[in-house]
Structure formats: C-alpha cells, structure tokens
Length: 427
Image 1: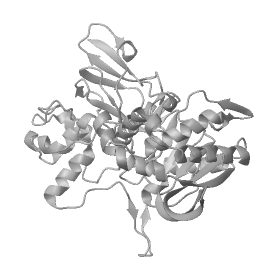
Image 2: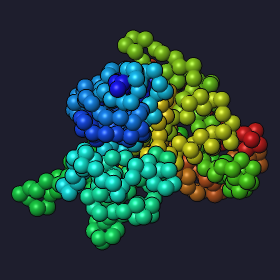
Image 3: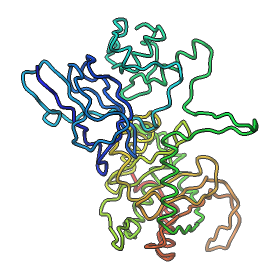
Image 4: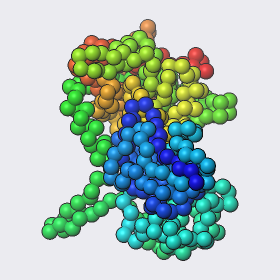
C-alpha cells in the first residue's frame, strides 16, 4: 500500500500560509476522492481541501488550529498505489472557496467525523446529478434522517451548485417551521436592553483592515459633481440591444470602470503602492469593485487587466464576478492584485461618501446615486435651467504620495470621461 502526502496547495499570489480550522475526517477514516478533508482559513477567504484520491487518512500532520505553509505536508493518505507519491506530483488541488467565513455550528450539529467513521450507507457521496456531497453535509443529513430523494430537492448554493450546510439547515427549518440557524452569538447581559453580538471572522478581518488603512494612510477626500445625462439616456436607449448583441446585462459599473481606466492611463501615479520610501508604479490596471454580500459583509472581486477589455468585455467580467461573489464561488486569485478600487455607495441611495482606501492601493473612488435635479445649462445662446441626471464622485487618496493637485485632476478626468460619454466608441 502506498502513501500519498497531502500538500497545502497554492492559493494564489500573496498567500503563503493558512490556518487549519477543522479536520472533517479523523485519522483511520476511509475517504473517497474529492471528499473534503479539512477546512482552512486565510486572511482572504475560507476554503476546503478535497482528497486527491481514495484511501484511508492514516495521519494528520498539522492539527486543527495550527498554521501551515504553502507546500507543507499536512496529512498522509494510505492508498492502493504501489509507491509513495505527493500531491505535488499530481494536478493542483481545487479549492472549494467560500467568500464568507465558516459559520458557527448550531448546538445540535454532531461531530461529522464520528458519524462518517460509523458509516451511513443511506447517504451516498454523490447525488444522481453528479453533485458531490461533503462529509459534513452527509453527516448532518444522516443525523436528521434525510434520504437521497429529499437531498435531490435541495437547491445548492455552493461551488458548482453543491449543497452547503447552510442550504441543509435552511431546508430542515423550512420543514419544521423554525428560523434558520445563524452564525451570530448573543450573550445575555444584566441590562436586557442591550444585546451583544459576536463578530464573525470576515467582519473581524474587515474591521482590522479598515483600522490598518486609516493607520497607514493619511486620507484626503475630494468631491466632484458630474452631469451623466448623456450616459443615462444612452444606456436606457441601448440596454436591450446590448443584451441581444452581446448576451450581457448592461449596468453602469462597466462604464464607470472604463472611465477610471482611461483616467489612470492619463495619470498613472494614481495606480501605485508604497513600500517604505519606495513608490511602486503598477503597469497593469486591475480594478477592484467592492461588492456587498447577502449577509451584509463586503468583498472586492478584481477585474484584472481592465485596460485590455472593451465595454462588452467589461460587462461580461463585471456580471460574472458579481454573481459568483454573491454565490460564494470566487477563487482566491479573483480577490487579489487590485491596483485601484471602485465602490458604489449609490446602490444604497447615498449621494456620496468618504471611502477608506483598500491597502496597499493609494486611492479609492466612491460613486454616488444618480439623481434628477435642476441645473444651470450653459449654451452659446445663454444659460437656462434644465432637468439633468447628476451624480457626485468622491475620491479618497493617500496624502503621503498623492497631493491634492493629482487627486483633483484625476477625479476631474474621470468626471470628464463620464460627461463625454456617447456610447458609440465603446462598442
């Protein structure tokens, strides 16, 4: 019998280690290829490591709660192979990435490894449609007495449509008429008017990053009002034709991204980062777009090499990233490497905001809500009052390396690009 050494795989540029948060299979348990072995957490995302082969998990080398380096051996699987191999010699393991943190389990959840070892013949590893069931999902389903027919009815929201434990709890509670278990923990206090809610892991990371950004960069914010009437009218006129021609819904986001890209080309010193006393000028323009998740948390998918994409290309990339972000299907590399970030506070009806810089970038653009308002319109024949679609842009920038003149000129260039928009040259 051969020994397969499971290696912590590479999870993208800039990620060098991960914490083993939980082993889903205990030593001595029989596993199948693609079974989830362990849950891991980085400062970017939480993931699961699948088994690369059938066999027996003979030894866990990195216990739960400890940190492993990329390339480090974390477990050994006994297989039917005749020689020892390493996961370094086979294809890189696919990580089943979840954007949100692993939620705290309700008290009724059993330790999945105990049930799996005991064996549950009524719960297969895969559904008839080929969708994989993780050990945790099978353990919960067995404990709750679900059969294969019921599992087939559950709509999975995980990677490639797989059923997650949250999907399972939602289905179980719909049967019982009870509220869905949540990840928040409440603590009783002497004062009944106060409820203490523990931050989940992602919220803790966001809080840490926001404080670190304020501590690192002296923030300055500039504002500019933009007349986007031409842009709004063109989109309303052409959005149906655009979708028919390119198969993509046309939102305002790709238009905003393109306007930013054009402004960065003119003012490349916005597309930089700081390393001590060195300024690193980025040759690629990778635009992050802050995306709100259904649970209220925030993630920033990245449009890599946005300067190489046309409007249809940007629309396709924006729609794909936004959809997969909300469905917990992003890969680690898709939330890394941004050089400039856009956040749309207008989505929530806000006119403007003072965004916090996404480190290690040096600027972030907030886009306010588009509102119809009366405005003075200048013409060769004289000025008059008209109804226009107006929007406020706000740019926060790192005053260590971006002065008010550069920040102001860049912001005005973005505004000019939007006001000059006419659509034809973008297709």
